[in-house]
Image 1 (spheres, rainbow, N blue to C red):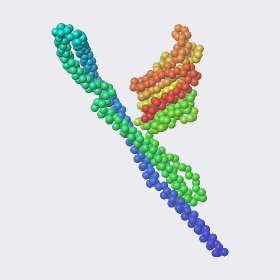
Image 2: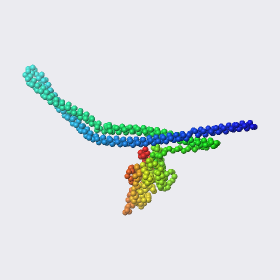
Image 3: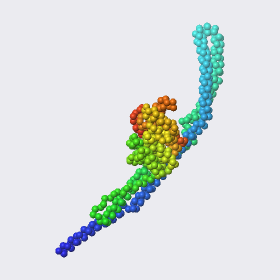
Image 4: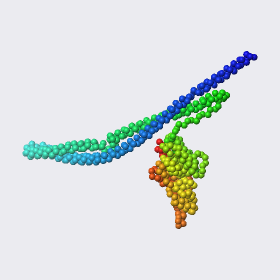
Length: 514
């Protein structure tokens, strides 16, 4: 009985020893699988790669400015050289005129020579005919006419000699004229390169700039390739750092579990990834209205904007998030003010709004951002509306709100017209760099979409009066592109406008996201 108890005690001790040994190995292995030193090293690597990316991006921006500067210098230098060549062109055209005159002179001399040669041919023909007639006579007649024949032959020879003598100065004059023509042609060929615009870039002042521009362009392309490589390395390093942190947390939990000798390890919750993105270069706010509460489903801008490293923020006209807000845009404006105060001063801010969201974007840019002394780099509004769903209440700085016009109700419409006439246009303030505005007057969206409404004038007559335009007043220094688009009375014109602008907006945004 004692021996059996002793063996059981030994077996129990062995099992406990093995369990403790196994637990100890788990603790030891967990403690050193991922160390704090490895995490610090990985974080340092990520920080260094981020710095390299930032340096390369700064160099790229600098080189882009250099490239733009060189392009401008080349254009200016071409203009300068072209002006210098004005006098050379005059000389070139004068040389062409002289060349033409010399060609005419050569033609004249050649004509004179042709006439002399023609006369020589006639005399020789007459001389040969006289010889033939004399040879055809019999011997007796030849003897009787010999004296006259010889006299005529001498006269023919004299005429030929005189004509040949007359020909010699013309030949010499022709040679001189041809030599002069050759000289003029050489002069013209030499001047041609000085006035030909196609050869302008061969000018040393321009060619040196072109060589420098091409070199800068090649260097810029190399930097962009280098940036892509650095960004790929940064992404891998960031993922590695996050994996190390997660594994370290898991191993710490496992170690604590083993030390506490819990029968079963507690489920490990992965640690949240550490964000190392830092600040964004651009912040894009997209504001939906009440008729289209999610314009991103039509615009499809989110992934495209984020591919440029920008922050994409979706909102509704009465607030941020998906919850219902107040029936006005004050909630959106106050939340936008908080955003503005957190966004770094050197970051760009872009606003896009549709319908009531367009009106909220205008209010946020011209009032909130303006009061915070903050620049809006790009403001795009599509069929913007103000309170009560009226275009008049956003295009005009009304005292209160204008009333909705009604078909056939001339009294109500007269109130609407009076509201507009007593108000002044809302100004797009100077803190907005670029203002893009598109609106339609073909179908409901804004409740005052009609182009004309019936109203009563001061004499009580019924007159046709235009509703509020969609065009805003623009402050000095703000670049603006405002235009009404036509959809031929389509009942969903405001949706069609949104769909059409979804194709245009990326082209406008890209210059502000780079």
